[in-house]
Length: 444
Image (cartoon, rainbow, N blue to C red; front, side, top):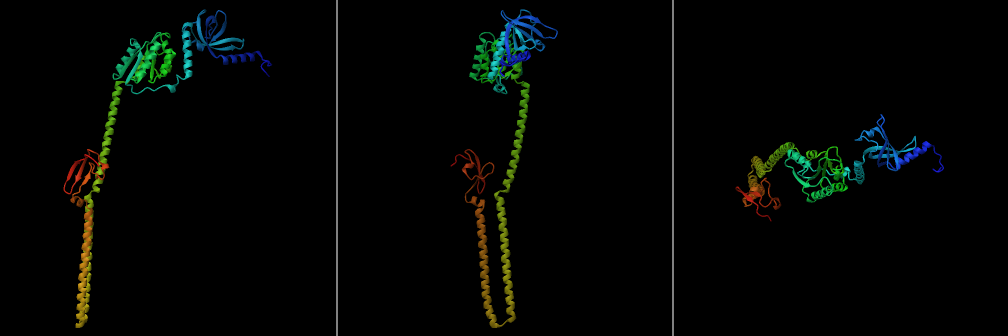
């Protein structure tokens, strides 16, 4: 069934009209004159807003009236923020008022709220767009009136807490028609010079009109596009401006901003002392580690020293010589025993012819034996001499005796390549007799 053919009850129609009004209009700003004001004991206010041609019924409930900073009266011009709706029981169009201000201040507040909603929708207040402050801040830029009380408060706090912090003043008017342009120019100048770590935008308290330059869209966009982080400290703690929402950080007062941006000198000294103690401990630990490593390397060097190798080879040579002597003695003894047995057999038979033959045979055997023994001894001596010569050839001391030397760096490592040394490095040359201290002047 279409809407034109539908049959509504009065309640259903009022309910749909109310939903349509609230959906299409929502929250609006409205200015007008108060009339028919009623303030019952419930704390709610009921009144009519009118101009010279029309009027609207209004209701403001207790939770909202408690926030109004003045007492409304008949005939007073006001600016209200309200939701357009319908009072269903009577079918009356009605405004449910959320806030009320005198018409003069109210217009400025309306402009404030409108710009605030616009910039918020564009993302100028988003947390992800805000920059973090550097730590520590070594040089601070301050945009304010050089003759105002705010700059004196800031400088006094900074001098007390952090005398080492440098401050650069970018002078600007902070009230009046020219203030907006001068604030924007000061922000641009600070960014162009790039001589500070952060910017403090500040002034003392005042009325909404006094602080209005900090609610201008140009100032808000200059803060948003600043490459340097900006801290806003405008007015008293209860004062809030568009600049506070856009700034990377807001401080409730100029003095509080100075406290926030400075470091306590005593805390800094304590931190330096702690850092010094940690540094000394780290250096001591490093030295202990290096000393242990040096002892380990010295132990390894002693274990691989050439003299130890030579001692091991000399011991092996002695063992071979003793084994050779024992073998030769055993062989001579064995031959002697053989001769004795032959002589015994000869004596047992003792025939002269056979004795003569055996004598000749004995002489031949003795000659062969002596020759074999001589050859065996000669071969043993040659073998022994060859092994001794081979051992002598690989001895570092033998190489040194031929005029060579061994180069070592300051850590005792043997230099085998020019890639191991640098020009100007100290080296030690070990000779056959003594050593020399050298310094590298060139490498090829």
